[in-house]
Length: 339
Ligand code: 13P
Image (cartoon, rainbow, N blue to C red; front, side, top):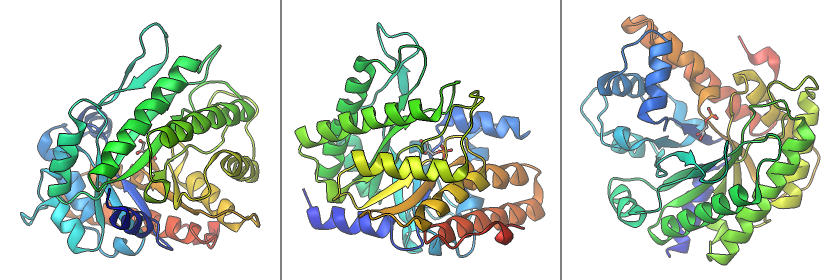
């Protein structure tokens, strides 16, 4: 394991003011989002949208890494350069989603296990050669009556740790993503409890598999009540409960925590991160972002209108959101900065 490389990459991904753009939507998810925005989904429309997004001027000051999907890391920018090489040349680390998706967990209706361990070493070797320096694996934990089950927690934690071990062996910083979904009517305390449970199980499995924690990043959900819960908590409570959960369930030697947005509005995701970075609580981590929808939602619908004006406006929207989240890294965002 090249500890020096892993630690260097991890710290660059969460350098002050920087976070991660999650642009690794699977072909199925990206196609659905394009179709919803009125664009015919195809390999070329997925490429064209992302090439425009990733060609935005100046976003490298806010983004230290971009997570790509397998199709995208093999595609080109409009000028013909490989997307991964175009990112690297701007000082942005290319990353790669390496799981093959969340599948039904046998004997456990409503629950998922993330697959993709078979052949993972060989794929990591290829991705490293293509320029990738970090990876992502997303476990999906649903809250409902009687779930998450112990089987769902332990199998997903085990898979996350095995994935992380293979990535580190091959020089890729693993982003460990156990996502507790916002879907459902559960309250914030249930989200807290389920998050604590999957974090404990995941880091126990990581210890068993020999993961070098200073060469990894955690991508958790924030502590939020389910979408259908009548008792929504304030932004301040989200920040307070999230920090409390992390302090009690995340190792101290982890370099950074990069939140997912998970369906929050883009401004909520920024405000929550900002509040956490303003809190007067001692913790050792960089608190940053690895947002997908919260960075791209408006950029995508704007690009979808077609034409060069829309493409330029889409880039401005992405640059604005990246800049807002960059400010939230140091607690310097404010609603007055939103235009
Ligand atoms: P969202 O920020 O849209 O949740 O996406 C982040 C991500 O990469 C989920 O795996």
